[in-house]
Image (cartoon, rainbow, N blue to C red):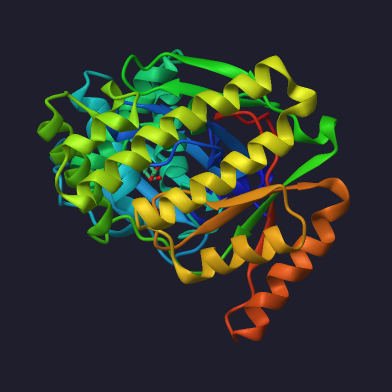
Length: 385
Ligand code: GLA
């Protein structure tokens, strides 16, 4: 597991000398609102306890020097020659953040960053956004006073979109930077206004089970961009700037193409589900969990049948969890790999885990990984160790 002390040690062993500080940024789970962010809709993610740590120090020159606990050697880039496409692999994310910070007019100092991750990569838990956000915090705080977090989220997203070349929305970076422990983050992706929604399943004797299906989720793999384009086409056909402007699925009857109609129906209904979940959590938290479970399962069907981004391991995990008594379950994230989130009553957690593991074993699939998912604090500077 990652720890600030471990990151300091990594820094010492790879670079020599002492880090000026250690920063942490978490991965995220999205409770509701999938593929709604780039449609200017609503999302409701929360930060995980697991994330990425970076021990960092300023350098006197104009170099960004990076190392990762998972890779040998180090990557060195010249801050004055950064350009999209110029850096590839994992280092493109931190290099892209340096580039996007400079493009937004921020001072970017020469720096060395030693990075370690406690978020499984490819599990759909936004390890890449965590890497961007930890870099954005470390570089700006090495340079001076803390910056506005919403601005940093936009800069981190720009790094991913324009430097790395992945056309993602704003959800993951916002979740990593803005989340608070015991809350989910309601984000309106049109106005970018956000609010903290109290979210404490344990207080209602419910649990969140995160199931890594072990099928790697790769955002760069075309389908994500295709969905984005389909949503934009559907909005264009209806004469609205984005699917967010639609609130009634009856309006979708005007789309002739059945595929585009289904894509739009997912987005419109998922926006509604976000607001329903928030309604339950704020007005009747004691009764919320069976309702949220029902909405999670509804969302899974919508992602599977209308948006068509689920994968066999996710469908089996959801079915097995429900059959073993889960209140609800769905795939999370961009799709085609990654994780499933199940909501269970406390006493059903073990039977649900066993049922999912068994369903995978019967199909001779790689055993799923079960992870803790507690709504946690967003990115921060770690204490001095
Ligand atoms: C990925 C993207 C996000 C969002 C989700 C789907 O995580 O990075 O911006 O679009 O997929 O909800």
